Length: 179
Image 1 (cartoon, rainbow, N blue to C red):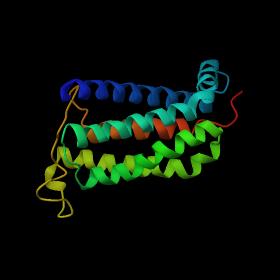
Image 2: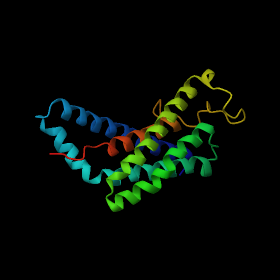
Image 3: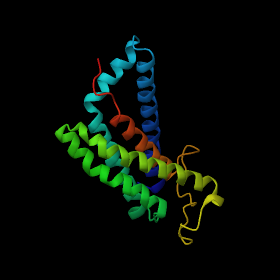
Image 4: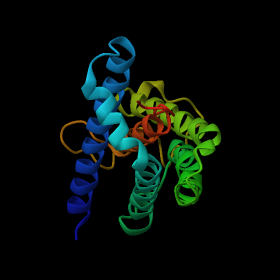
């Protein structure tokens, strides 16, 4: 497969992650605002048993995608990419273990990684769009403003990372008791 094909595949997965995160978040909001509406409770109850496995799968695919870009496509990660990796790579290890053990207490240490990585992704997206925001902290030979991939008109590598972080965060914040 070519880098373009892999990029399109990863972009479609990111789009799917964004849609899933938005639908789940909307279901949580509607459930809180309108407890008598049944569809949010039914949706959340259906997703909850597989939420840890889903979060683990997103973390693993995101990690493999980032490794593909740096090791196969030869896109050197910039400084902000490394900070996003610091958030995602541990999730690819701890979330599968938590899913295997059905250990929901993982949310207390996985959620800060997902939120922190997502915030770095947002900052990185801003620098891609507005290179003048880039401070002297980035490497001049590999600036954070380089856009290696752009699919569907907006999905860049940091945007794809944000999509993964967002879905992981939403899956980890599903209500404990759904009835």
